[in-house]
Image (cartoon, helix red, strand yellow):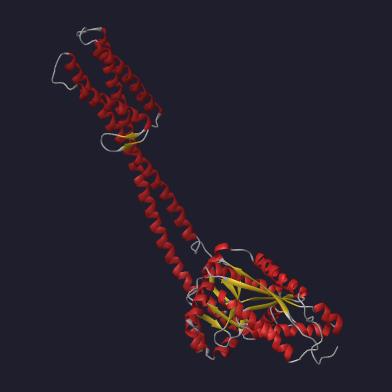
Length: 526
């Protein structure tokens, strides 16, 4: 009875099961639709407001244009009538300022108030602005003529009348443009007020719908918890009969259900587990990894499998994380099925080791060497350090096979591998590439140590031959290449360079006088 109560307290954290109009999808969807609608209204209002600001800037620009033209007209007439106090350059600047404002109406740009004006978009407004610019260009031509003829021209001349006519028409067109823009502002303000009222209504509906929906959800949730609790015992009888660990957790990684197998493994009672968090009996690192896996199931709604090594007993498990859905189709919890795969994992590790090792000598094979050597080259490039590669070829292996048999040839290869392992450190990469080819990549070896290591290697073969363990003498030919991060080359190029050095040594041995390395050892069998 106690365990059932404990489970019930934890299960009450799940979501309701019944369907209805007020479910977990209806409220968010309704709120989203209304919210998107109100957002669109806000964007429309923002657009209308920006348009009003642009139109206010336009009105200011047109007002400044009319003011500059009027000032220009007044000063020009005074200058032409002989007023010596008038600064003709200042008069000209007034006209230039008016002309720049007219250009800004069509092309945009900074205006006298400091604002940056956008080009007029309304075709009717642009047409009026173009007419203003045309009239101002004609005004400029007439002004130049009047200034040139100042000494001979008097008031009332044809040029004076034409100038007054063009000036009045320009001022009139500017006034018409100003009135048209002001009408647009009045219309936009009316639309702005209507949209504001609509937004208030929409947000009132959102608040009411959300409040009502949450009330219904709370009531239905309490009823559905009882239904989920009643099915708990049926679920337990099913999962307690398996040898796999099975447990149920919520989004916060709290245990909702634990089967008997997992309880026995943890050494805890059901009362101690139900409602507890996963972190209660796991390390912080394990808890962080587990939480991310649970979050992934809730976010993707998909099952997932992971291999897990327990820090408790170093056993391997295949964990299957599956979403548990309620009647609404939403994820209420996650079921974890943990299957012991320790034996299978050990077998996989053994097979992996076999795939990287040479079965005859126990050294790395070609695949193992390439895998580790490529990694060391990347590390050397990153740390900007030199790296050495030594290739070795067992001399006269074919002669040994033909003379003493392939079994003796295998013994020579094994003995060569043992000498290489004894001459280098355990951390160095030693491999048999195939046949009589060996390669060594010391992890740490400087220029001044390379000669020492070669001497030690040759001494190892001499000591082996002196012990007379085999019926023949064995020796190797060697070649060295080094990897320089400043002149990086590939592993294949490094091997070719070392091979070339090694074959030079092999050719020298063949031409040098002395006994063949495959000759019977003193006292050995022929």
